Image (tube, rainbow, N blue to C red; front, side):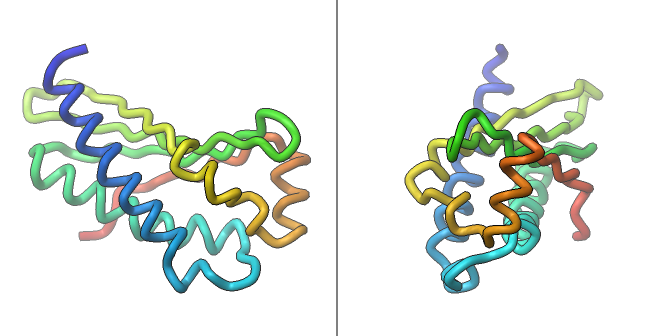
Length: 135
């Protein structure tokens, strides 16, 4: 792993974890229960800001990505993001950011409406595409 890759990863991880904490502790999320789609919409807004910031500061082009919620066992889920960039030299960079530890303490899956909790349990994995943000 190159120093460039390590610094990019640390940069993205720091920004996304800060954003997740802001989201979870924010008023928009404090309703008694939220839908999975509302959570991903709010998260998408945050992710777009981090992607735009990364592209501006690191001089990257964003190609696409995914936000994944995967069931490991009863009531245990992992959350991660795959982001794909291209640097100025045309090298492709894949970033996998594990958000599980940031979200574990919040017991976030318990904050989803019962129908969404059931959907998560039944499907085992839900993948949301992260398209390039609008500037």
